[in-house]
Figure 1 (tube, helix red, strand yellow):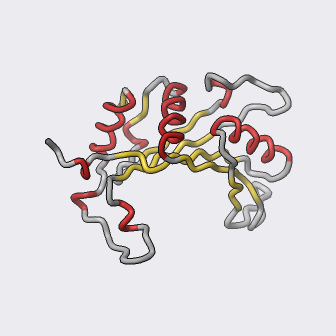
Figure 2 (cartoon, one colour):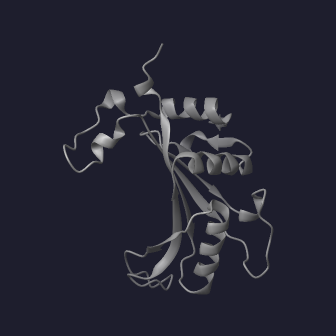
Length: 170
């Protein structure tokens, strides 16, 4: 029997819609994200000025939602269904985290196209971990996680294949 502390798990799923501007379009994206995840989104602020895109430092340009536990797993199942249960191998990083994009929100089962909202794409980022990862984040007695206890790319790919029936394409 393998040690249960070494089994990878999903720490969180972050869903991000980048609009590139504030105002009405950002409000529509927030409303859409709230419908999809049933959780209130947070605005993200630009870190620098980019004159080509008309973005000033401190301007709200996107919104995101962080999902944990059951909400994260349920949303990930739905998002992988939209992607036809296929992910490219290059979307996994060396720590086992992975990201993928969804180009059209209307591909979700419960979503319908509304002309006043338009079409939004989104990024889905999945953070993997193992039991005991809190050691590197806590305030008191913080410590490093040894290499043998970190999630590797291969472990994450095996976990996703087994738990979510996903085909990882090379």
